[in-house]
Length: 391
Ligand code: ADP
Ligand code: MG
Image (cartoon, rainbow, N blue to C red):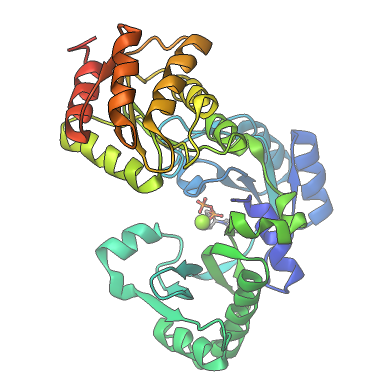
């Protein structure tokens, strides 16, 4: 689960991770009142969406008067913000964060991410703050310092020094940087975060480190331990189809292609998507209907896949291990009675009772259900059907 910048900063404050003062607003009037409450002469109006790159997209702007706060909040609230992380459709801005302006001396990058291969959180730091870190990683990976922290040992002063020396910080800054990193590590561990990113982490003109931006993602499986974080969930930021699927126990991820996929098992689902690519097509989604696939899950699967208007064919690829293929075949027939499946459906059922399943489908004589005997043939037929070459 992801949260907004203003929420990440609320958490930072609880752990004494320095961030500028600020207040979130949903209306222009509230934005101006927030700026007044903050006082000072320089404010930043920041669009709150679950995506980075807001600055470049026009979603982060400096205001030098209350009048300007008003104009900018008015402009940003309700805008569709397009950044390199939102995709071309962009995201509508429902909230702005009004923050005090900070006099920046230096912009750094600091992040913590779970390294699954090392089974440890890794702290990453770079002098290239404010830049797209993915770009830095691709073009000059040596500019990113990585320090893994064994969770049984925890963050130690030597971790802080290793990062600070790697960044080439001057002597006076080392202790305060280390303290900052130690607090951030505590935020990460105590809240079961998967990722924290501060880009930029700035050194102010007075020499202190301040989190100017804040991004946090959490381990969904640990959310039950953190009701106060679960309460920060913003459903308007999540894909509505993915949300509905998760309510029915289906793992669905929308993609940009036109071949809908309904598969049991995440590995087979990945293999199916690869095979569709291999034969020149593009999957419209990842969908794992799980081990206990039945008529209801298959029907729900069809319904979810067909909510995406790009879908031109559906490839059902189910391996009957625990589930029996004849049950799935009957499930498919029942599902087509429950909902209008208006695109060709290519069905490959293999494993337990595959022969019986093939008979059931053949005898049903439904014109838009096309059988396939193996994965490659199924993928080829599904891609051809999506191109309108078979129906
Ligand atoms: P994003 O990463 O989505 O573009 P940021 O929060 O990093 O959004 O803001 C973009 C840029 O705006 C920062 O790199 C920084 O230069 C500037 N900025 C953001 N917040 C402040 C602030 N409180 N004071 C001064 N400048 C800021
Ligand atoms: Mg940023």
